[in-house]
Image (cartoon, rainbow, N blue to C red; front, side):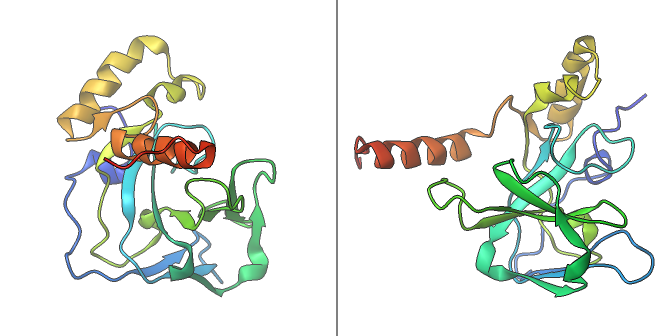
Length: 191
């Protein structure tokens, strides 16, 4: 039996449309949904095993990526949004009625990912979004109740789907974080 990684991963993962310029995210409310307009293709889209990200029922992972902050606008029912955990680095804005996370924002201007908003493209009916390219925080699914003995199968399933599993972020994002830290410390050197 196949593991329920995430509905977008359990089916064929495909590259997004080259000319895709964004779409509208909607919460899961059947009446009066929150709407968020995104005027960008998603970047660094990935399957995430952390316990903070919003996941569909039954999924082991969320699928989350980033877009430039200035390309995201709440266009309908902003009054229904509330920050899930105001102490978290990523301020996840969720619908108070259905619980779906519409976007996450980093307010700390010193953070390497400041200026990027985290989104879940599955909340959009628009075709063309890039689907996940890797898996992050894989071992964190243990914290959500997955037995450690299942991780070998989970990692193999991810690889079979074309998603390299990482227990942090992928190397490119880790390099960006380290470069940001080096710049802040004054130890950054250009090649």
